[in-house]
Length: 201
Image (tube, rainbow, N blue to C red; front, top):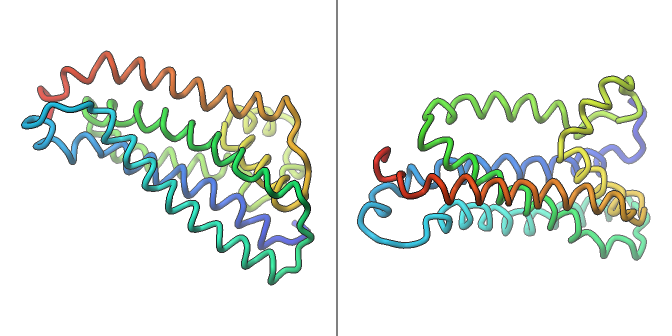
């Protein structure tokens, strides 16, 4: 596809997607796997999906070393804008916390979600510009892909790290809105359903 500095282009997309995939997968099974503890000990149940997401986030932070190494190997120009890299990481963390809460509830009530979600993640991977250039897409496909929150977060992360582009207010609002909305919906669903978890574990 004639993408300049393809290793960094690919790596910046993979890091964001892999974090989303790992954290939501772990969060989805967090309540089910902790069923015996939940039945015996009274504690806030949201701790289980939240802890899985935060542990995956720590792994993401360590994975950033791979980008630093590749930036040095490929001799990519580094600008002061790179210090804004925590912004997209914060937005994807919000998104993953919210989605983790939603998925952990769905997995308790609908065990088939454990299998169906892997299919969804495969589709999501192709709907996220990880290994292909956005400019190659037709306008109708781009309008669909823009509904994917990871599209905006990957784009911001890539622009900051790879191109040294300062994120606009609009980009920040879009990414933050996706993250905040997922947390609000996740908290509402989780708070309404958590008292009945013990009946399905």
